[in-house]
Image (cartoon, rainbow, N blue to C red; front, top):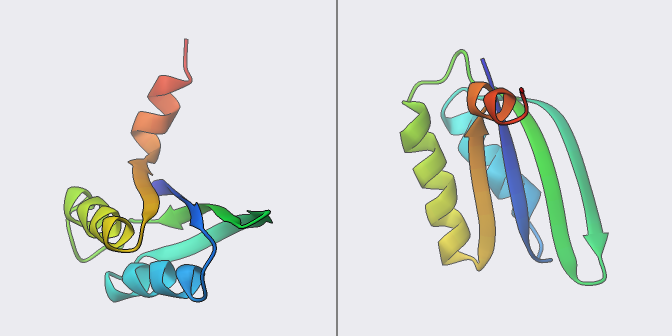
Length: 89
């Protein structure tokens, strides 16, 4: 099982490191990362393997969202099944 994680916000030091640390804490493996800086905005998309996660997906998503709220970032984690369903006709 995989998840798509998006992060958008003003660029600051350590965003990638902190999001990665939250993933590692819960045994979530980052498979792919795409990031760019647009002027002063940090934009990142991650694909993560959640099959060995030590927490429920909703708890993980809430933890990322809370970190985002505390640091003026928009962070969303979407389960691959939801992502695929949204794009299937």
